[in-house]
Amino acid sequence: MSGHSKWATIKRKKAKTDDARGKIFTKIAKEIMVAVKQGGADPEGNFRLKLCIQKAKASNMPADNINRCIQKAAGSGDSQAIDEFFYEGYGPAGIAVLCAIMTDNRNRTASEIRYIFSRNYGNLGETGCVSYLFERKGQLSIVMEPDKGRDEEELFLIALDSGAEDVSCEEDEGEVITAPEDLEGVRAALLEAGFEVASAEITMLPGNRITIDDPETAQKLFKLLEALEDNDDVQAVHANYEIDPEIINTLE
Image (tube, rainbow, N blue to C red; front, side, top):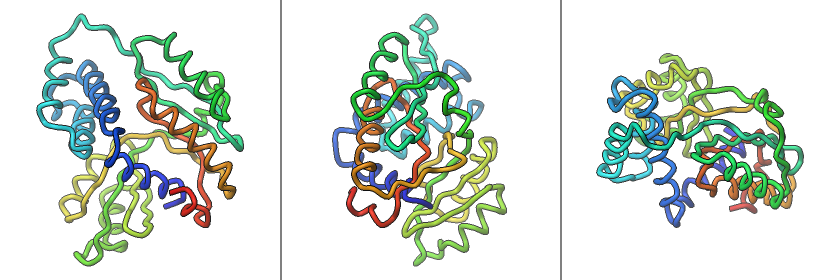
């Protein structure tokens, strides 16, 4: 676990208490519709849709909303296509930033993302400028409950035996990394063992991270990342940073 993951935990807690929830629901709805278009409306035969539904439930998205999204996507073959791609760029201290995009208007999105980078200490780059630094992986966030027998040692044993590539723990949270195709198997094994899986997703992880030990630089970086995440067409933002643990408390 790293300062990067610690900040991600802080942001998840904040998202549960402010109006970010509405934006989360909107983005999940878009992911569900794209998943249905690509692989059908049955989550048992559409792994991407299954992950979307799990994500929606973890975010407390009402079941009726989930079902409406699936039904709408399944019955709207003539709807406007949604394009998926990445925008790439740099933030403060040369941090590589990779934005996963879903949009029905590339021109609008390009203008908005370029503006966000330019106004928040960053620069939008060319295709391929940073994507080579990232690798597609499965990532699970685990709630640690040592008083119930779900401790770090048990997490390591279950996760690695079920095919995980890496396991790390910090305070009350564990992180498990898998190959994309092994994500569901590892998740199922952890649930069977009694662990609480806070989230499970396919993401882009950097091979190496740049450590930030200056609070001002960290604040500038988070301003950029949060502005990007706030954009309706940005589904996820990935960056190759790690925050020095000594300055974490100054950022909460």
